[in-house]
Length: 446
Image (cartoon, rainbow, N blue to C red; front, side, top):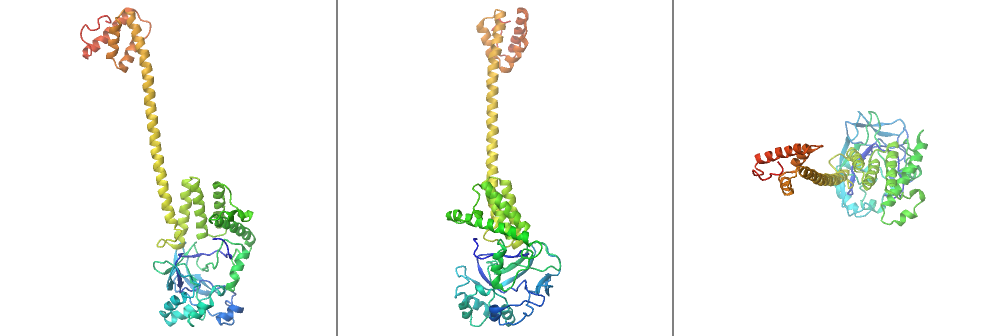
């Protein structure tokens, strides 16, 4: 989508995405701050009614990770053992769900939230109330409508399976034992300035490799380009083409499909360089397959679509299909490939049949021409022995093409009349034996 605020660091976790709005009882995966714990200042501290470092948060029980104090970022979830890419790290049920037609900012959402909260035990409600939230996105009227249920406002999630209300979190890359689990709070294809601005409401500063460290300068340049490309494709997706013409020059799209494919491939390459190997890269592959298809490069189209599907499976598993389902896109492309292959097969069959007909026609014409020449040769030989023309024509009518050719072969060369007459006599005996002529029917030839 077009940018209205900005992205952050790379995430190693992905959650199932859907249009359904679901309020989740999900524990924070990462607390960032200093080694003494996360500190919240100003309005955030007042809103949370805290002073000083926060207490250790509760974490979802798992044999894959544990809550520990990190060296420089406060509490975090660290892996107990190696975790392979695509592993579902944990899943969690929704506290309450909101109808698709109801926006999270609607005051009426409090009714659904309240109903869900009333079903919780005291321990569950305490855990729910401890969840951190973005103060800039919370409507005070909704908080008031909840009637004191919450001291803090839990995170609205839009990342659960609408059929089950279950949130599943997957590893988007291999994670080593002892590595901290991280997720992103904001969109990723943005400049550093926009990422910093979007993180401000959360009350902490990101310290990932894209924001700080020896590679930050190079990353900043790549993220600038990623943002420009992302915005370019966002403009192309709008119905109003004037937005494209009025956009800054760097965001104007190439005027050829081949040019757009090169930009999409650049987007995918930059995502991989930045370690953005989740849906960001998947979306880039979708653009690549889309423009490859327009160029009728079916093999490349399918390769990119399968790359996207591989990323989707790693991010959300195989039980859930998001709105932009890569599996559906692959199936659609496969049907198109099958259709084009069948059309190509039929075209090839027609080509071969046309070649066969042309060859047969050519052979016939060639044979016909050759037969005329051979008949002339036989007539000339018959004249040499003073045969009656009518008998010569009767003889020719009794012979097929191969027999005419064979007779001409025997008559070739300068031969005496007696020798020619002998050849004709042998041919008449053969025809008489085959009952093709009667005795005494061709007297002047032999």
